[in-house]
Image (cartoon, rainbow, N blue to C red; front, side):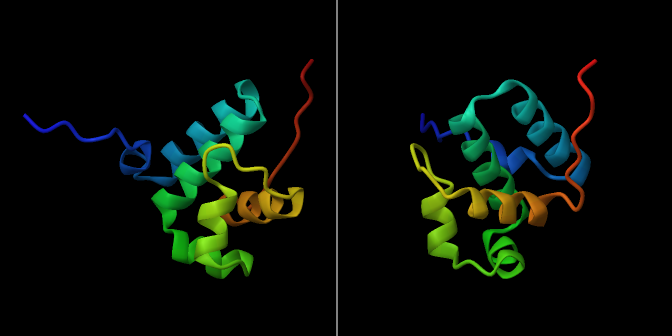
Length: 93
């Protein structure tokens, strides 16, 4: 029996699911988990599409959003804006 590696990007198949996943990780995850989640979401949407929207190359996106990467904040912000049109902070009260 052949076992394939689980890839969450394959299950992020609609916008609501993508945003819910990303919001949960943004609320509960650490910085590395957020970077990894952005990579999953970018892969689910299409790395070429995200590259086009951010002005970054596909290889640099793969590298920036890979495990143990330390991307610049500007890169993270570009990807977040490409993934979700509006980034909002809400009160935690």
